[in-house]
Amino acid sequence: MTSVRPLFLVLLLFLVLPSVPARAEDLPELKSAISLFDAKRVPEARQLLAEIVARDPKNVRALWYLGQSELKMQRREAAASTLAKAAELAPTNHEILADYGSASLLRATEMGTTFRAIGFARRGRAALEQAVKLAPDIVGYREGLVQFYTRAPGFAGGSFEKAYAHIDEITKRDPTRGTVIRANTLCSEKRYDEALIACENFLRDHPDSYLALYTLGRIASETGRELARGEAALRRCLELTPRIEEPDHAGARYRLGMIAEKAHRPADARREYQAALTLEPTLPEAIEALARLK
Image (cartoon, rainbow, N blue to C red; front, top):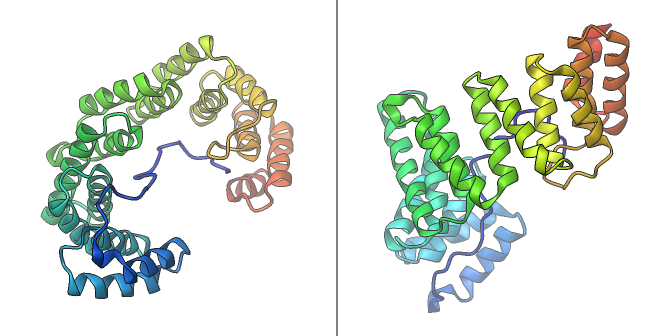
């Protein structure tokens, strides 16, 4: 997976079936709707789910899948409304709460700084915080809250202090992800040197962590700081195999081109951008960079 942008692990989440007991109403129509959803035939699934919910508005499982369908179809306000009903009926189901929180926060981002947006943001934050209390070891929920606290204005509940508290908890459970999220958050505050130090400290004990190496190189490529160290980190990435969810070698080559540009080595930059396009011919950033160099 090519990724040349900061790794804010997205709102959200790895969705799994909720722990809602089966009901007679689950069979067979709901099973058919779920099969359609799993087959990515989302509009068809949504229509069938809406019919089920109209007949049985307290069917939590149908509400949950209907909310997911609305979310996949970019109907975020409808998704938040549907998932709110599911969360009210299943207040201890952390998956449903997390999805409700995500839908609410996504809707808030679409609405700017209106009073309604603030309402969605606060409800989304509260739902995610409750999901964390119920399932403290699922770091994806905490990542969503880090995004909220670092991006929301103070009057809407934004707080870097709360973000770093969640980052500390993420780091306890997944040191690599915690380090990368901390580095990204420090960068969002323009504390670039501290971000680089966070990566370096982690790499002392984990010298072949692909994600930490890539993050160090990305920060160097974007800020112009520690260019030599950033280049060395990215070249080490090229000797390692990234996981499917990590930035690939095309991204690393692109970042090496950025570093070469900042170091006033246009021939090297051109060679790295061309190498990135050899690996991924449609990489837009590399295409634009090559055009700029010409």
